[in-house]
Length: 316
Image (cartoon, rainbow, N blue to C red; front, side):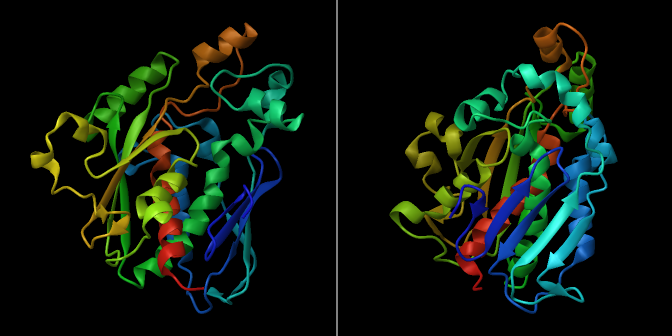
C-alpha cells in the first residue's frame, strides 16, 4: 500500500494538488450493484465546502465559497450503479489561483509543510501547499460517501459534529467566537465528536489491528488534526477506575463490543492568518485560509471513519 492509498479491501487512492488541474481518487474493491446516491455526495461536499449548517460561511475561506466541487465519474459506474471495477473520479479545481501564491516560491510558512516537503523531495508545489492542502480532503469525502452508503445497508450509521470551538462548548456561541477571531485576523481550533451505531460485535482484531488504532490512524491523517481519543479519553486521567471502568467508548480490547462507538478529535488553528503572513513577507498577501478549519472537517471525519469500517466489514 502506497503513501497515497488507504485500505486493503476498499482501497482508496487520492491524487492531485490544491491548485493543479484537478483532484480525485480511485476506489478499488467496491462491490458491483451499489446504487450511488449522487445527491448525498453533493450534500456532503457542500458540508465540507461551507462548514456545519449553523455556521455556514462563518470564517470559511474565499476559495471554499467559489469551488463548485462537481464530481466527474471516469470509470466503474454505469447508470448510477457500480460495476465492481475500479471507480475513478475527478473534481476540477475551477477556482485555482496559483498567482496568489507567487510569494511562496522563495519563502516558507510557519506551521505548514512547505519547508519539510522541499527537504524531503528536493522540490515542492508552492501553489497553496500542493498535496499538503486541505483541498485534497474533498476526494476523501466522495470515497467516504460510497463507503457510508454500503455500510448503511448493513445498519451502520456515522454521525460527527462540532462540539467545541476554542474554549466554547455552546453551539449558540460558536459564531460569535469565530467572527471575533476573524476580526482580529487570527484563527482558532475546534473539537469534533463522532458517534457510530450498528457496528457488529467482534469488529476489530487484537494487538496491532485494534479498531481504535485504525480509526486513530485514519483520523490523524486529516490535515490539521492534532489529537484523537475514544471512550473516556484524556479526561479519564483525572477520574478513578471505579468511576469510569464501565465506559468503553464502544471498543474493548480493540474489538467492537456492540455499544455506540464514540471518539473525539482536535483540529489546530489554521497557521495561515493575516497576522502570520504579514510578518513573513512584510506586506499584505492574499489569505485564502479558514478562520476555524474544524467547521469544515466534520464530513471528512465521517468519510475516513466510513473507509475504516468498510475495510473491516464490507466484502469486495
